[in-house]
Image 1: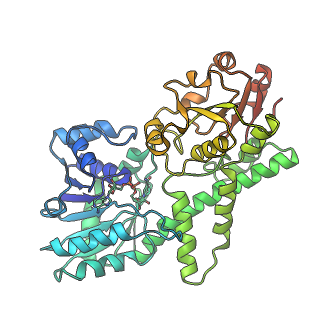
Image 2: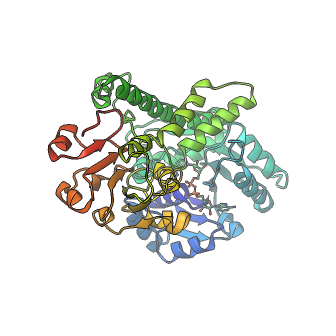
Image 3: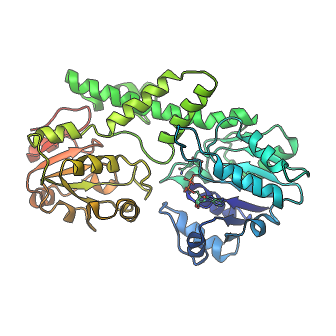
Length: 436
Ligand SMILES: NC(=O)c1ccc[n+]([C@@H]2O[C@H](COP(=O)([O-])OP(=O)(O)OC[C@H]3O[C@@H](n4cnc5c(N)ncnc54)[C@H](O)[C@@H]3O)[C@@H](O)[C@H]2O)c1
């Protein structure tokens, strides 16, 4: 099948590459000329484990193409996927200008039947709006399908190639057939393709992300309570997670959720609810808890340094919002950097993949280190913001040798309390006892 993917960011590039991998001829369109040039030259634009190999293979085999020319990109395509940004507008609602802008452009370009698939996360009713925007200028036949994407950055290739489920929102029999053929290679193990109407599909994505965010905020509140009551959140987590109805995943407390999806999607669902006069009370609390949680370590840090961070230097391990990605959108580390530097502290950060993006966003407000141990030099304490694997079993003697004080503030609960006690560190984590 000939496929066009409009928007070549995290979702677009993974989607385009994976559809090429199953033999389709894919053209990815983006307005960012620099990005398109890089991709055409075989340079990958995001860090995503496993993506580069597939990208290079499909580029070489000429199943994957990149262009800034929308008209040329969609000309021969039977399927057009939209993987465009839906960032939060000022009032928290999803900004639809990218999707509706491209839909309007498509209306001026289309000359024959095509299936237009929306992969972006969008409010209920968007399929109708896309349809109307196209129909303003194009009177021929076409279908608009809502097909939300559930991939997780860091494991996106696996998620795309072997999805838990594929959600397809359409009432058109013709589009259903096209979608079934498109996804058949990805669900050979029998994972479900769930057909529904467009509105239900659009809401499914928001409900999924909001539920996961709720789980995180719930555990962060349990962690706070553990600190006040002298319980250990790790034990509580294990105790409840073995109940199948609760499940083991997404129960880890920390310094809040971030990334390009959860914060904006929870906000957008609250806004969509308020537009139909529904006050989604739980989600308002989820947002409030998360905003506080991002700075959960700060009061402990201030207390340890007698409420004066002026001139103090912190090593910061982790910038990406989660491990195995270079995505720093809404990363808790950025909120910590802001809070620490506002108090007059300096920061030296290390992240295996996220440094370039942080440099582009905040420049030299902080120092950067090429190596996790060099970041510790002359620092008064180590702060951990992202649970990268290489931080899990570090060389504690190197940490002790490089830091001015044996002090660690851990926002991801990476270390065992008794081991840390034996090593003689001052250690503060989330929802567990402080080790002195
Ligand atoms: N990132 C994720 O993990 C993830 C997962 C599931 C769903 N989503 C959703 O998918 C959508 C895309 O997210 P993303 O993270 O890939 O965004 P992104 O910002 O990484 O990529 C969007 C791309 O679209 C391009 N673009 C903007 N306007 C364009 C236009 N008019 N024509 C062509 N290209 C244009 C941008 O240059 C950019 O390359 C969002 O709605 C997001 O919520 C994201």
